[in-house]
Each structure stands twice: as structure tokens, then as C-alpha cells.
Length: 294
Length: 136
Image (cartoon, rainbow over all chains, first blue to last red; front, side, top):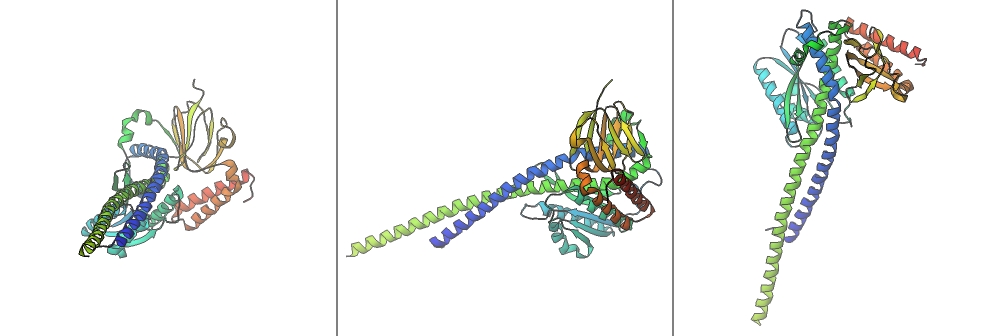
């Protein structure tokens, strides 16, 4: 049976925790808005890129001698998994979900006898994956020092990936991130970067208008210029989706924590009052029975 | 005949300019070209250079852009640029940063094609600097 003082201490400590989680929830909500805006602002560029790529792709088809970024190296022995997670925790199952999907993929690939390399973006995913796949992790890109994720970060990651590809260090690259569907749902997603999966249907819909473009320089050249840029764009998109998803997830987690703390405080207060009354009653009985004995 | 067309300048981070304009001069990789209303459908890559929009005033009328492409269809021109900076900002230091970054790229470039490409870009940037009579 805890004493009154113990109960008082526990109540005040839970109250302090509730204040922190409440504050974190509000900070996450504010940051979520900004992250969502950033994700929205990045959309026009990505959409245009997609439509032009789709257009070029449908014109060129899969020809001989096309860029290896598009058709692959002809093998799929070595896989690079780019696992993107957040830098911080306290966001419910956000990081775990991404890491779990990546881990599943690693297991599948290893079962097929493929070589797997892992490039972690974000510390949290690295922490989880390091336990099991320490030797497979090529590098960890830490974005903790970056306050606002810009296109520059995406570019440096893509440069890294492309130079590995040019050195023949892998054949297929897949990126793991969390797709921000809405505030409640974030979906861990795997997206194949190299060889690129280009949308084709979009181009077919309005073929009539798009067919008569003139190109300068030649289509092939534009395509080979665009493919590396597209990788940076995809990575940037994933980073932003992750950012928005992380804050949404953190907001939900902190909201739950705040509510739990509130419930706990109610319970503890009830117990505290009961104990206090029991004690008063006990003292009264002692006094009365003492008086009666005289 | 339409006197203006829709022009938008889009960077990965946001839409920088979206306006109805009469004329835009774009630094294409094979040479500058001017887009007027009802230009034929056209897609071109860009070289690092100055994009001019005579119709807009102030800071927006001249923008340095790098890396990307321009798409013209009947009614609109969309310029996708990896980097876009207003000219006054560009003159104060960004050019030299850009050249430095490219020089690093050149040092680490792998393969003939990439080397030729970066050398070409570097040349273009230096010419641009000369034309703007900046000391770099």
C-alpha cells in the first residue's frame, strides 16, 4: 500500500510527463503543417518530370542501348536497399514499420541467394537494422544536423547512389520510405529506383496532343539527362513524404500518450483521495475509542 | 490571336513564377530561344544561364537557372530547373559557388561522357560569368 506521499509524487510526475507529451504533440502538429506544405510544393515539379519522362519513354520504347538506369545491367545479383527513416523516435510504429518491411525484403532476397547492400538514410532505421545486418550496411547518411530538408540533400544522396551504380556495386536499387496518405495513415512503401519504373499509361491517355513535340537535343539525350535527375526527384519526394509522415505519426503517438497520462492521473487521484479519507477515518476512530475508554 | 501564354518556373522545392506573359527567353542547351504565344510544341534541355522574362518587373525578370528542361505546348511554357536564383542574388557570390561545385564534380566524374559533360557546363558557366563581367 503506497503512502500518501508516494501517491502525491507519482501524480506530480505523471503530470509533468503529460505536459511534455502535450507540448510535443503541439510542436509535431505545427511541424506537420509545414512538412505537408513542403510536400505539396514539391508536387508540380515531380508531376511534370513524370509526364515528360512518360512521354519520352512511350516514344522511345525499350530500345537496344538505352541507358542502364532504365533497362538495368541485365543482372539482378546485387540489390541495394535504401532505407529511409526518421532521425528521431517517439513516433509510434513509424520507424519500425519501415524497418520491418526492409528486413522482410532482405530476408526474401537472401533466401533467393542474392547479395544485399543496405544504405540507411536516417539514424533510427540504422539502429534497428544494424542488429541483424551489420555487415550488409554500406553506409548511414545522417540528416540530424539538417533543419529543413531541401533538394540539396536529395541530390547528394542520389549522387552517392549513382556513383555506386556506375562503379558496378549493385544491379537493382529499391527505396523504402513511408508514403504519406493522410494524417492517420502512413504506408511503408518500396519503390524501385534503378532500373527506373516509368509511368506509361499517363502518356497514352492524351497521346494525340503529346505526339508531335519537337526535341532539342535528341530524345535519347534528353532521357539520359533526365534519368539521373529523376532519381534525385524521387528521393526528394520520399524524404518529404517521410517528413510529413513522421510528424503525423508523432502527433498521433503523443496524443495517445497525453490521453493515457490523463487517465492515469484520474486513477491515481481517486486512489489518493480514498487513502486520505481512510486515514482520517482511522484517526477519528482511534480518538473516539480512546475517549470512550476513559 | 492570344497575346499572352501561361509561363511557370518550377524548382523541386516550389513553383517560383506562375504568370501570363508575352515573351520568355530561355537558355536552351543548343542555344537561347524565345518563346512567344502559340509556339510549336517543343521540349529542350537547359544549359546554366539567365532566363529572361521581359514582361515581369523587378527581381523576377531575370533569373539564373541551372539543370533542367523547358516544355512548350500550345498554351503554356513550363521550365523545370534544379536551381533558380534571381539575378541580383546570383551575382553576389552564387556563381563562384556553382563553379566550385562543378569543379569538384569534374574531379570526381567517372566515365568519358560525364567528364565531357561537366567540362562543357563549366565552360558555359565561365562564359556566363564573363558576359556578366564578374570576376570569379
